[in-house]
Length: 60
Image: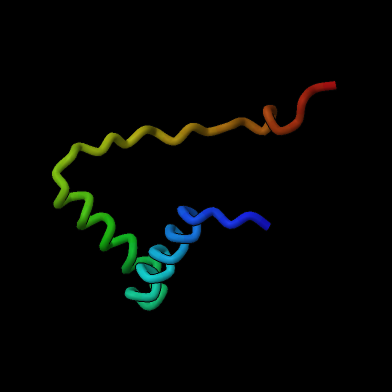
């Protein structure tokens, strides 16, 4: 199977980052939010798009 060096590197850094927070998702999210705020760029929050059940079941 083909191994992509870039993907492997991303997986390595992701694993190191998660391990540095003892795999605590809340701690990782808090850290990323702090970094986002410190960066100073405006973040756009879009409203959640709700889908109706009709789109899941096409009519016959």
